[in-house]
Image (cartoon, rainbow, N blue to C red):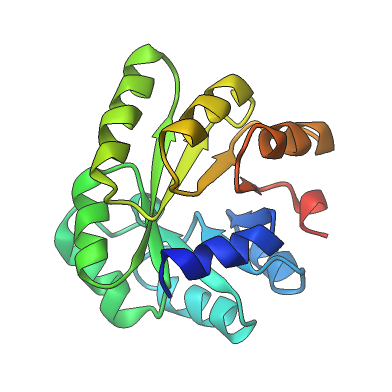
Length: 188
């Protein structure tokens, strides 16, 4: 799968399941969501988690920073690439994003936009275009989302602090390609 294919999937799937536990995983497997962000697991069960999602014919991104037992090293990326069947990874770490791309994985670089320094860092990072998707948190920063989408054609996912359908619609109206969230109500 490449960036153009993921853009096409996001065009028709505006909400991404962000799975943080077994209950969410079971709900997600029965949902219409075609893209899943895995935010939980450990080195012993991540292969099984990914397999269950892939068996449900969904695209899977593993948030490598959140998997217990994996370190922020290239060998962790290699493990995900060679053993899980995941389509890609999510990380806040540029080195892991670069490594994942070299292993043929799609990449989602996550940015916490807490201040102007974080926004300036995002602008520097997107110039390199190492990531396939940008994920920004919190999603309620719709003015910032609007600014980011004018800087790049990299798809942007809005995440975090999504409380209701209005938040989803505002993020999408601001230019986000899709919204990611852990609230099971949105997955229907």
